[in-house]
Length: 359
Ligand SMILES: [Zn+2]
Image (tube, rainbow, N blue to C red; front, side):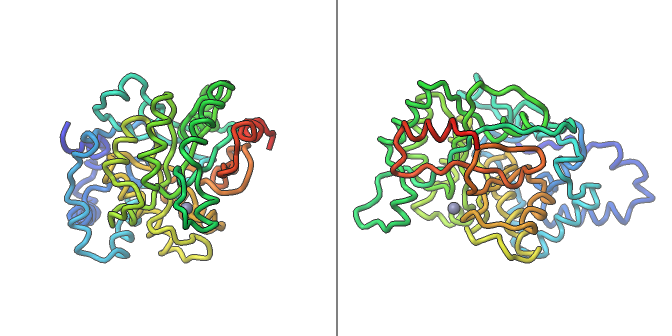
């Protein structure tokens, strides 16, 4: 169980014609020595067909990947990964023409064993059918009472634990059931069934109060949420943000931990190198820390353009969340998913009204 076993490494095609392809093999081995096996790269899922990835339990993942990677520049490292993707036959794929296999994190868990999330058990493949669905995605940031000297920005982004608890109660009483972005995608791509009243709860930025305040309130109600984290802030150990240990605990309890970029800089009007750095950098860090690969991005400050989408899609993200208000999603618009902003003034009745809106 310890260490990583990548079944794709045993793919017969990698062994066929080894002699004829020795230069390629040499390249791959060199790249391996530099950055580790590209299990963290897109190669694993570039081809359809149910790869299973065994990973160590959260918190025990050890890999020389990070240490070795520091020896070469960030740009070189990412270029190597992108090149490997090409070597491995992976190309930029859109959700419209490809089958996708969800890497299966076979993680030993305690509580989560009883209710496995679809992210752990379902091979996702788009069956080619155009679908749309109204699935409200709530957007939160801070989940705490703001300090007395808070500015208007902080105030607007804060929901108190008391109000949040009331919101959760009213949602539960009205029959809403929390689902993950993976459930949302499985529904759009493959028609997987959803609860009658699904709702996705998301938190942007990964503030520590998401763990101290929101997590217990959600967990005691059997609800889950998705946290879009800023990976550099966590790596730096900033006290206002989650630690990786907290993220691992929430992930093990069924929460999704997804990308909000490396440093919260805008992803709009950026060149390809910069966007690749943000997309792959945050993805690799989350995968390294959790043993599970993120598939969703929430654009920092809601800023993105067509180039942003193209790069994240080529890095094999599956969908992107915006701050555009609305609740209807479709297979042809997966990188511009809409959300519903929850404010510190959003009383439960108002929240239920927003959840029921046809928008
Ligand atoms: Zn943000």
